[in-house]
Image (tube, rainbow, N blue to C red):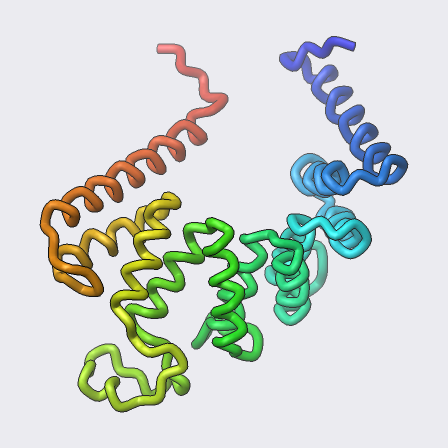
Length: 251
């Protein structure tokens, strides 16, 4: 059947049939990818977050679909489709997703476990969180590589209350879980940049300029600064295109 998507009734019919197809593919054919699409359909089209959550959870547990573990973890973390936030349950599902080699699940698990201050929502476990972040970076998640670089730039103190960003000399005497290491920070920043993280590129530029973790090189500093700028421009353009989609451009 051909649909005229300029007509409201055709759009409604198309979306209803799409939902029927996803339900058949998920419940009858038991295809994990289609079950995930069904969850996305319930989320984006029907705005039924509680049903979407059930689909994501089932697809994670029954069919071992990592992206669905991630989605359900996100729902639990922000309290979507439920009465309240459940960060401990969120971590459990991020870990499940990471075990299924979903890099963003690994990233979210790592950030939860290493967060401090008001952002801390679960019991801090830096070594475990580091391993999740490393796995995410190894699976080419740019943000995870950038996050790891930041951990090595400042170090990760055992007791965060002892760390004073305004007194570097005092910080030398505190106990670190991860000691500051400029070479490691540079390597992770460079990898994050190569994977497309503009903040990592900016850090690589600064490190080349200062000679932090790498030999000073003004040409390389300039080159990475330009890469960061180009990534920023590309991101801004993408945002602009998305914003203008559907607008009437009649003059």
